[in-house]
Image 1: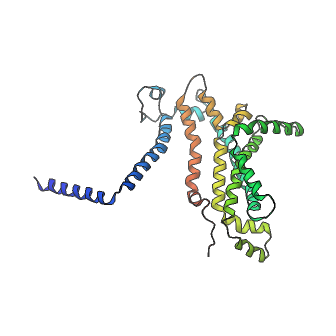
Image 2: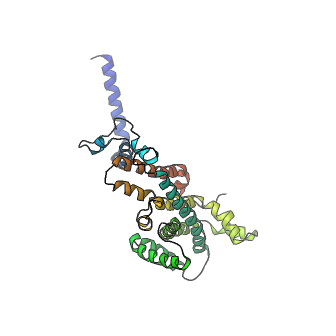
Image 3: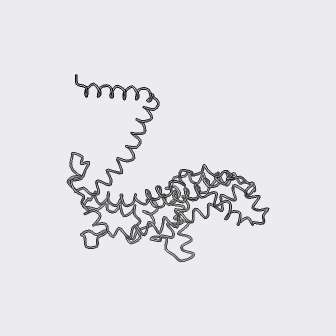
Length: 306
């Protein structure tokens, strides 16, 4: 046996012995579980992105194609290039989704700050009943609230003379009905973790209640506010059912409705659906990566900083 082979066997044996000493069954099972968990998240996303560059034959073939033969941009050109056949004008759908999701997130954060602070700091009869009642509303399926909301908004529209259908402002109001309860509940629990002594000291120094909220409570609640904002934005960005009911004009379609329209087209184009889905996913990923620091803190911070 040569010296190089002997050294290779010795090094291999040392590595296996070291691995056997450091790796326990708990660590091994955790590593296997983590691998499968990451695979379940990453692989569907990779398949979606790669399918957007595939041809129709590669997608429809019996044998799965994991890597496209070339990076075809036909699907993206159909979405954004006016000169392309079957142009989808997808940019207008992105704008519509932003016009709905951003106001929903901002209004939900502002309203939940006031409601959550009142529930956490002010003492009045029925406070816990109101908070729990708000949370119970969130537990109802969205389809059960759709008919009452539509009927109520129709009555209001007849009084004030505006259209319920194809109205993005109305869609924002319906999304607030879904997002405000959970936003209010999350922020209430967070505000209760902020020591009351800090606010009392600010009141003694001459601050009003609104100045205390603006100068003390909100700065300490930034992680929770960011979490609530991203959560409500994500709900409004991905919502399909209410947009499907309230939007009939193609010019007002949000991204989920547009993707459904492309999917149900008589001439199937799955690569275009995958391209639109990829574009729809990107803002959420960017938000999570940009605000990862605040999301990791979430509702856990809020202690006294000395």
